Image (cartoon, rainbow, N blue to C red; front, top):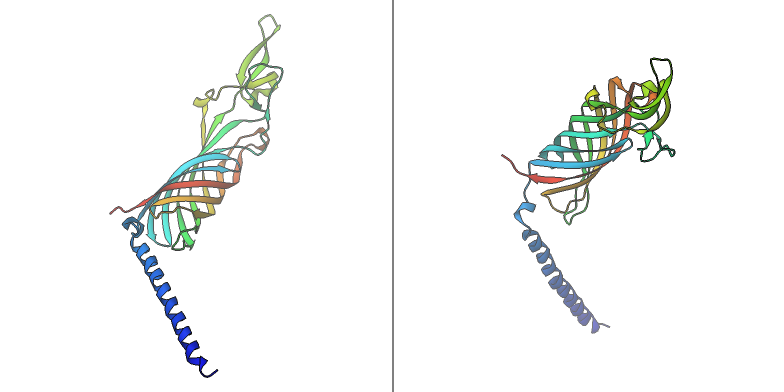
Amino acid sequence: MTALRPLVLRLLMLTLFGACAFLLPAQNIDIQSEDDKPIEEKLVYNHQNTFNVAIHSRGFGAGFKIGRIKSINLTRNWEAEVVSLRSLKEIKTLNISTYNMRPFVYGKLNYAYVARFGYGEERRIFGKPYWGGIETRWTYEFGASLALLKPYYYYVTIYKQLDDGTFWETYDEQTFDNKDQWVDVLGRSSFTKGIAETKLSPGFHASLGLSFDIAKSRTSVQAINVDVKAECFPLGVSIMDSERNRRLFITFMLSYNWGSRFNKY
């Protein structure tokens, strides 16, 4: 046994030397691969501009953000977006006794669209590993809202009284406020009907959410955002007859954001 000890020690030394010889080149390869990255992947950028498309619990929308990267953990954004706003009570109906008529929502008063302008921040929670992955940030935003309310017109059958006292059945385009005159609703009028009667209702909003950036390059942004937004209109927004002048709306939004990061001095 005593004679075997030097042989065992030699074998252990050869094994350790072989392992070191194998690992050290591998580490050099990794370091070299980092050095070989394009210069744009190593820079720290100070601007970030993105576009987004979104669906939310009351409609859909699109917008853009102009961002300033203050540090690796903080980005500040000026934001603008336009979204549709519908009532959860809307039920689309089709008059099957008519031909080639549009479906309609009985009781609807207005189409509603909201333009939003605000300021927000993104703060990093988890960064991406050096090999890539997902960067997670929490976000908040607040600002001004402006609701555009375009009257919703119906194509209806009504009776008009003639000079001799008799009634004549005819067709007309009317809003729901005139429903007491209706004999039947045939369908929805053209969207362009009533554009000149559009009214405005100012308000304000605030949101809180999470952003998941899946872009492979530092120069690009590809993020999925999940947000909850509270919006208030002091003058009210009337979409359905059953909920006129509603002031508070809570919506849940899922959006896809894409854009670029760059330096501007």
